Length: 286
Image (cartoon, rainbow, N blue to C red; front, side, top):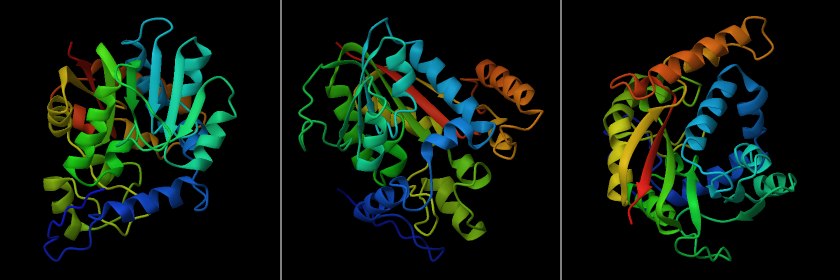
């Protein structure tokens, strides 16, 4: 829906055409590449449970019992399912039909195909103030331009009732360089990542933008959220846990230690950006 024609300075090609990123998202998450997002968060490595547990904790801190929740970019329902199981009224939206089908198979929440940038269109018809909380746990790092990211955030604000909560995730620039295997590019591309969050378009993961905590907070605030707080999700130990198998004997102890650190340093300036993911949590103004 938009493009950003930044010059890469001769250091490589960057994911500036959103139509190209959208096509890569469909390819990557449909299963045709062999990637399984559900497995990543559940059985892939010791990092997955840390990310999943902390994300759920931070979301639930803001939800009243039985709250109506919209999970935008919700993939196979890895976050929607446990929320629905605990009595929350959940609707999931994702652009990839194959993921929506897997999500719908849970049978405990509604799952629809749709785009974070247009929650009123394409058969979704989501109205103003329909939800107590909206989760954007995937869309923002697949949107290349600030304009498109603000569009997704403003749509989330629009469908959330006054006083409700929006939770928006970003992948950090540090994670792009040293964590999790999102990218395997070399020094010529580092400057574009660190200075502008630009993602090379020749990596497997269909990233379009990498955030830092300050940028994510600024975008959330500009979109209309107040009292925005940005949390580091996994903490500084998360990246290392990508190298630890979930069935390794030491995994439970390491996961527990990583969670303790992540909770203690969640909003500590300078440490937040050491996480692989950051969450901006804000309130929709009355």
